[in-house]
Length: 420
View 1: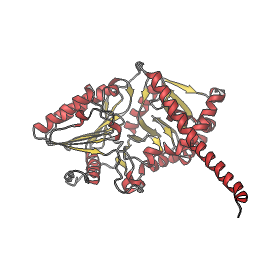
View 2: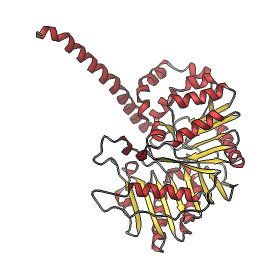
View 3: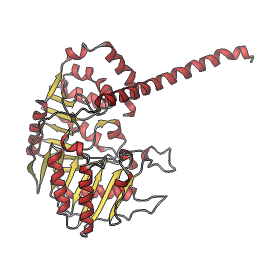
View 4: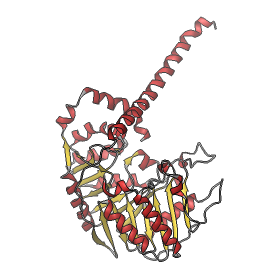
């Protein structure tokens, strides 16, 4: 075949290559530019005050569940629990800032270890890359698992090994556990609207097992000494009304997404969700739409402006079909709402660490508590109504009237949906 005959095929390949680079590259360039501009605009700005609900304990079975919506209340109770520990502290977090609040937790954990308490800590190295390395040094009597920035090792083709540790757990002895959306740091104490729960009773054992399973699954290291396994006794009691659901990418287990979809599909009265980032797959969107179309009161609280502007813009790509189906979209103003909660039909509820996005539901290590109890659902509904009063509701007319450049930006960023 002559060179002239090859030219059309070569030209076609060149066009296809350039088109592919454009389709893939442009969304990334736009996303990076938007993030940089947003970061510059936020400099020096402080969130405004927002309404909160005082912690209140609800009896569930043989234990209690206390809900926190303000970081200051939560952190004081968590620190008090660490200071009262007698045998064991299990502490796991995604972000652990090296600021004043982060230092308080570090000192409390070290003090517990110094008085003979077994102290285990887990944190995600990638989420804390900007934290001073000196803060991440601990005495030998504190057992620390630093989940690595690159966890795949030599198995770089194994997608099961790329999930981040996005969980937030604290368990004290056998008596109390904490789980929810709060990371540890001064900004989360007063500036973020999040939700956490304190659990007592048999369900504490499920949190202990979740921590121990993660520790034992990730304790081995190639370049330094492996941590010792964490062995637990078997609990004789269990609480069927409180279930701990864990996403474990290493085992290809992602029950939290199915938990949500099942609850939404069974809803007959209401589905009220509060989510920091809402970037679901289409099956999840369809479940929400179907619920609204059959007359269920579906409400979704989202940040008006979150700490990730690209996630905000990609999330907006779902708004038209949700509004058309009758879903009410409520945008939380003046502060970052980081909660991951839902309540259905005044009976079923969940609080946890998993966002409604692909990274959480099909990628990261996550943990949610599923609670079947009318009193607890009533508590979450009251919290939701307090949040709703601080929201701006998005109407279909307002949404359809948005500027053309906004619609274009949503279209450009749409290819990033499978990555977030």
